[in-house]
Length: 261
Ligand code: PGA
Image (tube, rainbow, N blue to C red; front, side):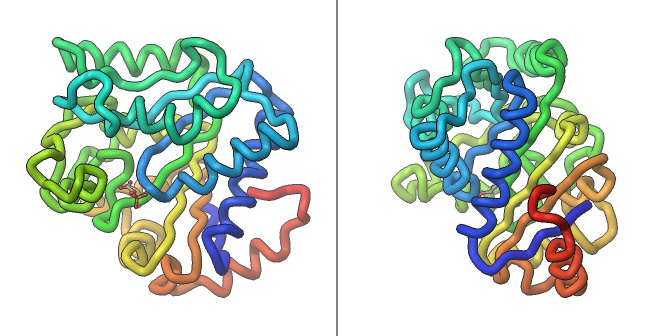
C-alpha cells in the first residue's frame, strides 16, 4: 500500500487526475470504477476540465459505479446512477451505455447483484477504482463487519451512514434509503489499482485504523492493505493520526515526477 500525504485536497486532486490521464493515454479503453460521496467530486471536476481544455477522452472507456441505493424511485436525484451522471459522466464523452451501475430498482436484487459482477468481469475488470472512506471505515457500502471477501450484494445501511447522508436528502433521515446494492470488498480487491481518498479531520481515525491498524472487518477499508496496488491519498487533517506520515512523505518525495501514483 502506498500512502500519499498532501497538504490540501487540491494537491490530492491533481495527483489522482494525473493517474487517470496516464491510464487513459496508455489504454484508451480502460475500465474505470467510480464512487459517489463528496470526496471524489474534485477529481471529477478536474477530469471534466482536462476533457474540455486538454482533450482527455473517455470515448472508448467504460465505467462501473460502486454502489446504489435500493428503494428510491427511478429518476430520483440522489440515485447514484443520476449523481455520477450529473457530477461527471454527462460532462465528458463516454459512449452510450458505457457507464454501468448496480440496478437498485430491479425486482430481483440478488440476480441484479450477480449480473453486475458478471458485467465487470466481461468488461475485463476495473483498471482504476476510486474510493472514499467512511468515518467508520466503510468502503463503498461495505459497513463495519462486512465480509472481507464479499461480492456485490444487498446490504443494510447503518444509522450512522444514513445520518451522514441525510444532508443530501434535505437533512431528513426518513428520506434516506435503508438498503443498497454495493460491490463487495472482494470485488474491489480485484481492481488493478485502487485509489482511496480521505479528506478532513473526521476521517483521521478511520484512515489510521485502515492504513496502520490490523486488517479487520471492523474497519472494512483495512482490507486494502492486502490489495496488489492500493494508493491512499490523504490531506494533512485526514493524516493527523497516522504514525508514519514522515516516512510516507519521504517516500513520495523521492519518486520521480513522471511516475506518479
Ligand atoms: P464522503 O463519503 O466522500 O461524502 O465523505 C465517503 C463514503 O461514505 O464512502
